[in-house]
Image (cartoon, rainbow, N blue to C red; front, side, top):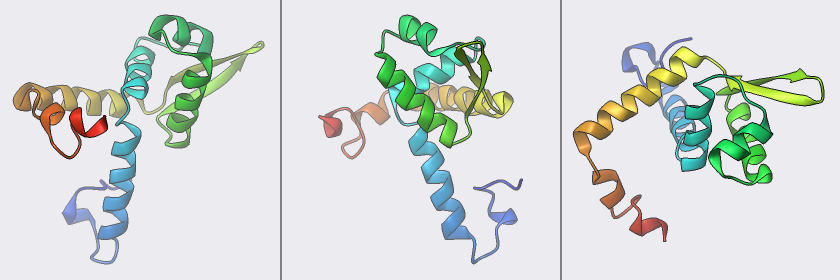
Length: 124
């Protein structure tokens, strides 16, 4: 699969679509609960009950976020008896993006939270 944001890999007609796809992927990562789920699944696979306990979120919230992450192919699942076990899909790539985000945050500090368009005040 060619990189979405690599301009050398794009043809002129595909650029708007590929950028849109990349923006959608970043929006899937743009929720604190989904990031918490991904970080917790980096430890290993868990079922919804374990995630609700560890993250302090309602079962319905965890399930809705897992559905979003599944639809974006960031997580996968398997049946284990009556439970469903969730894990990271493409874990190396997901962990790489999260690590890159942490490095970027180390450089930019709290600038994102202070952003008038997307920061904390804009979300109130």
